[in-house]
Every structure is written in C-alpha cells, then in structure tokens.
Length: 273
Image (cartoon, rainbow, N blue to C red; front, side):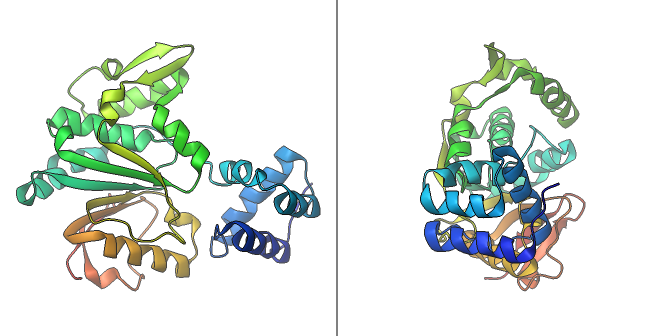
C-alpha cells in the first residue's frame, strides 16, 4: 500500500511553489497527503517518480492540479442556505445597491455559480449583478464555463432545488444532450471566470458578497487567516461573507471585524475596515 511521509510532502509542495508558484505549503497536511496519494495511485508513481515528472514535464502540473483540487459538489447544496440568500442577504444588499458584485472564490466546476444565477434570475435581478468566479485550476474553470454536467447528477440537483423552493421547473434551465445537462448560456451572461490563487493571488476587486464554501477547510490555521484577510479587504463595508458549514471565523484574527448574520449557515457581515 502506498504511503508518503511529511518530509516528502514538504519536498513536493516546495518544488511546486518554487517551479510553478502554486503554494500548497500551508494546506492542511492530512488533506494534502490524501490528495497526493490519490494522484500517485492514479498515475502509478512513486514519490521520486512524481517529483521527477513535476520537475521535467511542466505540462504535468495542470493534470496534478486537476486531481489535487478535485471538489465534488452539487447545485443548491444546503437548500436552507440558498433560501437565506434569497430572502435575507440579497434583499439586504439591494437596499443600498441596485447593482452589486458577487465573488465565488474556489468555484470548482461551477455548480454553485449556476445555482446563484438561477436564484438571481428568479428574483428578477440577474441583469443587475456582476459575478466573478475564480479557481486556481484552469482545466476546471473551462468546465465551469461550459455549465455542462452529467445528466445522472440532475436527480440530486433537482431535489435540492425543490427543497430550496424554486419557482419554476428545474428542467427549464437545461437541455439534455449526449448524456449531459447543458445549462442555458444566458444564465451566465454576467459571469466572468478567472484563474486566481487564493493563497498567492492579489486582491483584484471590491464585492458586496463573497462565497467561499468548503474551501478553507483544506487550509491550516495560518493560511485560513491570510485568506480571510483577503476576503475582508475584498468586501465593501457591510458586505457579506459566506463560508462552509464546517468552517468558522471564531478563532481568526479578523473575526472581530465581522458579525454573525446566520450562525447555522455560516454567513457573516463586515462591520469594520
């Protein structure tokens, strides 16, 4: 059975940082180990062979990132979260801004972005919103742009949508084609997909709402602090931050600059610059 020790994980993360400027050095070690082992098993590589491939084959880094950042998700995951978004958060933002900006950080294959666009469309405000969806994996961003998913996933997605209490038939939003659900492209009319590394990337805009759900769980405490600082600086005052259900701001250095809006759904509001 394959295994890998901490010293080798550090060698791998340091090589990737020095050669490609992707910084995994402060990822939670257990998660990073699990993902690297998966890559070694899939590619049938030893530690030395993996290091050699990363060193000598620059094109391999995209395959590596694709596997390392794989994130199985679904549409309208946690339907109660989406109901709070529709009934409380978006209306609160619109009290001050008719037009506003949303950042989906770590958007993966885009299911959350499509969910947001469906919700905004049903609220009649999609045309007033600028959405930026980012991820560090360029391959997965290309898939997100296509908004095309296996038709077998639609049963769960539709159940979530029904629990969210959407106002239309979920099937209205996509067509079936070659075993896939192809979502209507007009849903993404105001979405810009960009490559951005939460760890090393710069602050690039100001937002009224930032969503980064179930991403920081893979970071150690020091890195979570750094990323939260970026989110704080990326939000307008009184802007909202939504994180994952298993994540928390309680112990973070910037926690005092936010108030809890909804503890169960992990939604916070920036109150201090």
